[in-house]
Image (tube, rainbow, N blue to C red; front, side, top):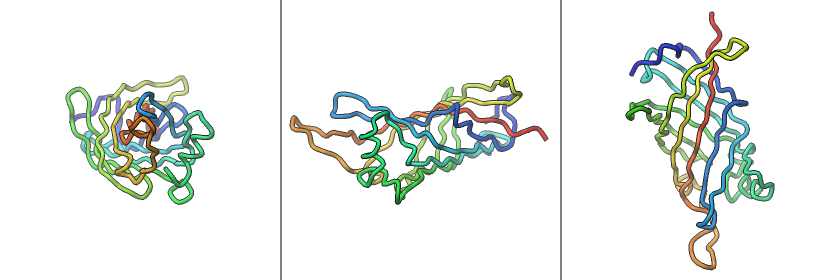
Length: 183
């Protein structure tokens, strides 16, 4: 796979203030709850081709924010992320493969000490130079995981049947990376 001409080789860094690492999970079987992590760092090491490229990311679990202080406290606690014992979620890519007009970023996702391979369906959104001379690249991505596979097993049975929190979690990424400074 060849890179777009506007994507230069080198280590691109995540612009966290213009990126979002979020999720959606079904609550009580009737609605969806969304949240995001506010503190993350990532690098995109761009090689000569996409297959030579690599992504690494670290997310601080204590930065979890769903907009509800009580829920956030519960999710940060031992029932879910246990941020005291497991302060980080990490992702390290293994390879990239073409998938029609998009590509799959395949790698190891580690949550709560459990590592599983995931494929993130990713779309390249282009490159732009901002008013300050920084070259930026945009990427959107999505994957679905089973929270139980990562040891996030807490739940409550509903009186009418079903459970409070679905097993399926959709992870949504809107990422902006900044190119390495010119030599």
